[in-house]
Length: 173
Length: 249
Image: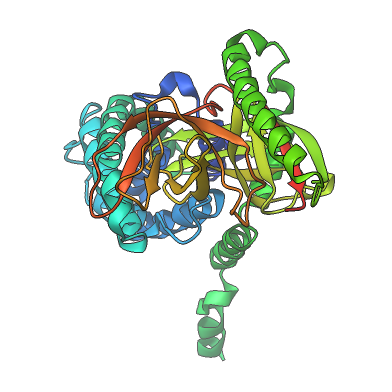
């Protein structure tokens, strides 16, 4: 039972991403903005299983998160797929990514995903009053970049170790 | 014979992992199509023991007083007007459902709350949600046990409002922060800081005269428009109990 649990830890932890997304603990927010949770899972997973698998899981994550948010015509899929591909390029063997570099990578990815989402809002709701969205959105993006980068070393390191341990036992894809 | 067997075992549908992936993908598409209702109902069940208690009144008293003040002023005016007319055209028949906020996304671009009442309890898409202080938003989708509310602060939210003092209509648009904007399509109107903003009597989505907020600051006119920042009287970041109102408009 213990072995089975360990081998499926990546899948089990994946199912909890939407729960964290709903829970959204306010004691982890900065300027009212939460970290971009899916990146904490996607980075270690893509590093463990590679770019292709990273892009597939990015697609899955995007599908789930899109279905949970009310902005039905906007999507998080492109950002997460591209991040999945990018994260997969980081090799494990040359130890390029230290624990604190997780933070830097997640910050850049959070900026990329946030900007991509913001551009979708601008394109979809383009009118005279979209000018009101600029300042709050820039504040939201940078607050998210900061808090994501701050918490990434903690969550990513933990998940990275779990995925490394479970990789030998089973492959998800 | 061996070749055929080898080819047969190499087909993708004969691989256990691929079937697992296929079923997982189907599951994800089901989640997408059902707007995550399965997840929301699952979250409803596991979060049930942690729902907030009923001891929030101290925090919310200020908002309630503000709401009552706006309501009182509006009722006085309505009363006076109706007495003049002498016949009431139509009475609104409202039914309310009390609900608990079980999830709150109140930062960044995603501004929504999830309530613990859903289609099972008679909540429908388009019902509007009020909390202590005033209007919070509208129900955007429902699952069996939950309903998701698009807040007034969401960048996708647009609501017709009016300022009761000068009786001018405007459009309330969410700007992705806690202070939505009202756009008035008249540069010369006399709006002042402190004016009450209510839902518009001309709105086809909301019942009239629900308190929304107070004008916090007024921007200079631009292109025959004037804009104002609104301080919402209902605080979605602090409210744990709300009313879902089903009203015939």
